[in-house]
Image 1 (spheres, one colour):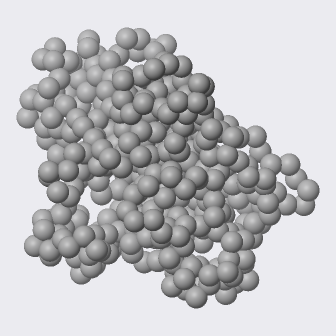
Image 2 (cartoon, helix red, strand yellow; image 1 turned 180 degrees about the vertical axis):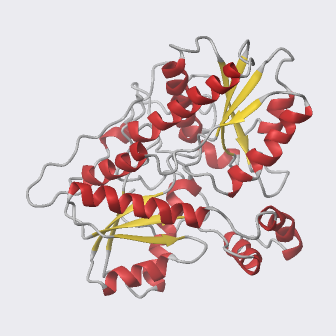
Length: 392
């Protein structure tokens, strides 16, 4: 089998810019009080037959924080920051906000923006990487919401591309890791530091199906393993995260050369008999060599410090570090960093043109990107196929 890199057809799957009426910020959603927790978890797990007793086990993470997930407030802050950036650029695009699993729901947001007279909607999703849960599921749920709202055929919904290697996402992560390493150094724990990039574990089969199906230059299919750096397991979900982690570590090498790093996974759920991406962050921490002097944990797979960061990293992972006496720093997500916010509006301006203006060039820092505007039908296949909104 050839070891040449695949033809990255994703970068060629673009659509011409168009003029849009508004932006929909698409989030996951989270409970905002103790009474919301179980109904919210029922929404997330609908159709999987998960009993309330099992949901209550997960609910304890939320109950620890008063039943309130930070994700909704973070999206309110992100919406306000996007509106400020849009106003500064004089784009005249109102921003609406809707969630997959909690209020404000997609269907309600679509009804609102339709009532306000908007018909062409550009969707910004709060996930950076390719996977079923991070891309296709949003498209499917938006298509379902159009039907639920009675607006099928009334609205055009187009989604901006995945932005894992956009400078607006990468640069804040570089500064976060650099800051974590500096903290270790200031505390005298930099003789042999290690950086762990943490992302959400997903079923191995879903990871292997993530991204478009590619072919090698000779026309043969991409192998599903083999240790190639660009295809070392986890499909494009894993490849994208490894590529960004490598970018981050290359960027900090001027100040911290030779620091070892790893990609680890967190927050797995579901049937324990089903293989999920590994290693789990807690097992990876336990397996670190005894001479590692300190650990930087970067939640690379997330764009905000929501519950799975606040609980799985700030509680469980840091407790694991404390249990073995390992100094550790959990660095922040991109959140509402001005560069991230500006980068999201750059993504909007790749697709949106008005008054004869030129669209922005498509920025990307890895050989994998810039990612596709339109998903092929076999991209990130998850549950049974459903209708999806037209573009990626």
